Image (tube, rainbow, N blue to C red):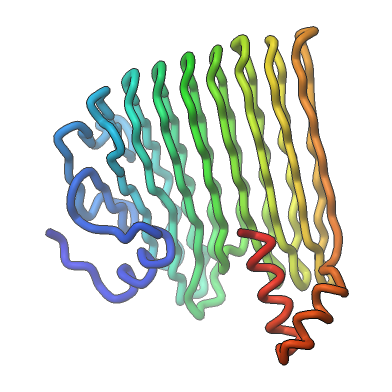
Length: 308
């Protein structure tokens, strides 16, 4: 087992809600290399030979197992690019816990670009959780640019849960999904920005199979001078159902731009989009103040409930 220093342990506590342990199927990437990894009986992890990253093979016997693949960066001025591919056999049920935490105490930018591709077979149930987090008292930026590619065969379920906790100065998220017949996609995206932070999320979901469906819920809070742009796009290429909902709270001098897009190429494609941007409700604020909370405490409660 690899011995983890204090910074690595505290970052892992933020990005891995289940608690990272060096047991079962896991891979910890630390400052650009695999610090430790292990297999389970049904899940095998192999390092790529042609580029940085891993291949994760999840067998059909996998029923309710977890895979932990966190990334921790503590070296200022580093750019890390990694390619991870997941091959999930028919009938597998698995939860994949990812996430990246950057501790930057230097004056140079630290950046991680994680490109994850999920090849999901028939009759699978896959949950993918990804958390982003930044900390450290340096002036260098904490930059995260994730790419998520999901390819779903027939009659499968995929749940994608992404969260940007705090401390990330710049992020450009790109998500691409191909959905086969009878398969269902559920996406929950939660984000909070402050200071001069900048966040952009581009999502394209192609519903290719009959009776495929997608539900996308994006919730965000923008504070101070931060900027956010959301552009989810659902493309109906068959008789399908999709619903996109983007809700944002805007505060201070922040800027939020929401651009939900729907595109139908089939007469039986049923696609709905909703978008709302607004300030914190004054009545809620005043009610919480009557319980003895300060304005800041009341705002924090409202934001936490909104995001969760």
